[in-house]
Length: 128
Image (tube, rainbow, N blue to C red; front, side, top):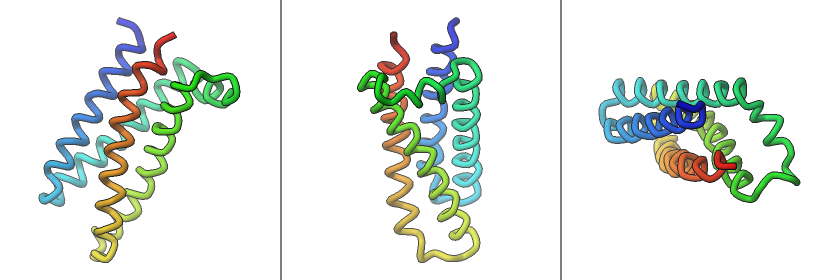
């Protein structure tokens, strides 16, 4: 089995885990654990891809990259940025500041959509 297939399987499982986390959003403890695990796993996946493919070096060649790779990178990098924002707003809510709930909710749905689009575009970005 190639590393591309292993990465795709992990990516699919991460999105599945995120969907379970969203479904469990009413149970704060379960939601926080599942979403934290999915974010951590996704960051570890990025590190795996970097180690095996030198992805950052390839991504830095913006002018010569195919359009589909550029689109994939946009969603992937945006997802990581959104993860940071989700963690910040989520921690504020855990500390009792529920004023950020609307922001956390909007960011959460945006993050989920971007992560799904990262998965979808990865099929074209990974192909040669």
